[in-house]
Image 1 (cartoon, rainbow over the protein chains, first blue to last red):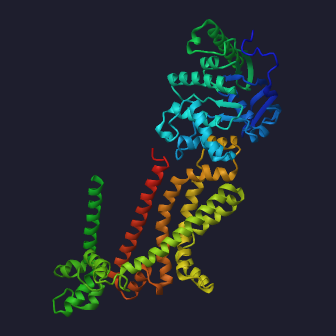
Image 2 (cartoon, rainbow over the protein chains, first blue to last red; image 1 turned 45 degrees about the vertical axis):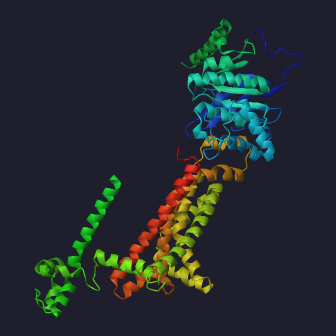
Image 3 (tube, rainbow over the protein chains, first blue to last red; image 1 turned 60 degrees about the vertical axis):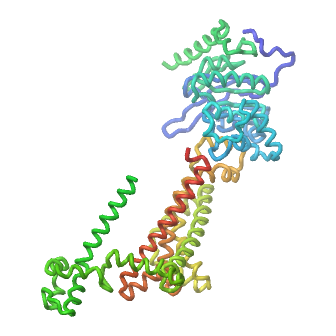
Length: 270
Length: 309
């Protein structure tokens, strides 16, 4: 597959490197293998989507990168460090499926929350809040409380919060999973623009094939029991992507390959 | 409006029952007084009357019913007697410019209220401190929680005089001793509620704090404590009522200082049932006002914190 998106001369810097990664959860009746022999490199500036059915380990892998789970085997580095060191160096911003905004804080105060914890000065906090609110198109909503915003706006605020402290990596765990399709399309488009403007490395977990294909430079197809990677697809789509790119033959071809990968993963099981 | 009507119906039924109960409760005394006044009573002999049951005596002397509601020292005072006494010792005292005389329920209510509030403040502080340490230390959770529960199985009436004696020996102020007894009752609901409240943030919110590399202290101040506000207020309502009970019980042991508990005790020494009942109502009214005040604070705070939406 030819690769139009990463045509720089210098080899891109690896941000996340997983080699032979295993994770087994000890449950009461039997151990469950959540990840088995996962090998993956995420380069700087990549937009990588993880797609697969429930229990395929896509969220678990993201949580391993964030040091929220501890792998039981293999090696995993983030920015050349262990995930836990990277976490302590605030290498990533994590966006959960629920916006998780505190109802007693305004949107601006919610975005300030990680900044307060990280010890940014008050003026710096104000500047950053202003900047990220602009990035997610929420200017003028800083003084509102979360319940005054729609679900999509709340999720945008939560993305703004993850962006506020300038982490190079954005980990997103089905951030738009609870939103309706129209809002979702809109947010996908905005997310791509934001990615183009900020040059972040994004790892994105999703259930949706069109979402994965539309957003990603690299699509990682996973399958369950044990959770493993079945296919890694480098997207041939250009970096500039209007919403109607989803009707082009190239797009449909990639979507078809993702679907095939998912099907193959399931056949393994049945 | 509907709830107001139903409350009114219940109150009316209770008062009616109360008046009805006054007849058998006070009929023996009514017979004695009637006989002294020269009225015919059946049975005429006092020893025989004593052997007669209340209800059958009441049925044999229907003519005496009108006198059971106006006795000076009835076994069961009638509602209007209690109301008159209550009025006389509250507003009546204010009218005469003696709001803080020894006979005024306002004075005694104030004494009880100050001990209640002190104990409530102690209890709330102790409860929150214990809850925070229980949530943060597994050892505390395992070792202290059983003792906290055990402490509430000891009757407060038994332990209050001992607290009074011990604290008097340490020459602690009486009001502090009362506060400690109130605290003994009021910290418990606060501990139980706050432990639940501090643990109420879900796994995602705790993970989120971890992704920002927040310390336990930051998580406590920024997430756990604000999240526990609804639980705290629910606990405070129970706690303040328990605190009042503690203060009244403490006043039974420290009756020389006055207070509603002291009024109850004095009333029972001298057979002043009207005084006992009006002190009881004063205590109930005080509790109702305190719980209502916390309810108002709860409504305002939770609304401002965005929990109401």
